[in-house]
Image (cartoon, rainbow, N blue to C red; front, side):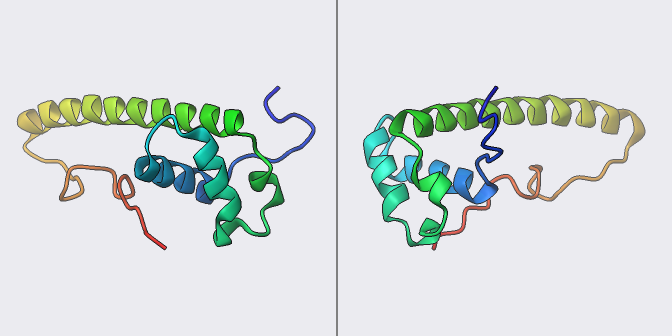
Length: 109
């Protein structure tokens, strides 16, 4: 199983950092990404995260990318269904931007 026995998984903070950093330094720069993790003041006490290999980080980022794409696809499908329903019922509530409230809230440190 994934990470069996160690009982530790990537936190939301870890994931956000990986995604933001990958956007900054570019996709496929896994060794650099690993250096960024180790250099990050944010995770100085997060020994588990700091000891991930470049390959593990790569797998995680690829997994997250697929997850995000899937969420966007699902959201678009939901939006489509919603707007069909709304045309019939004339009602419906949605966030002003039409996206899930927390989709693109990237905070910079």
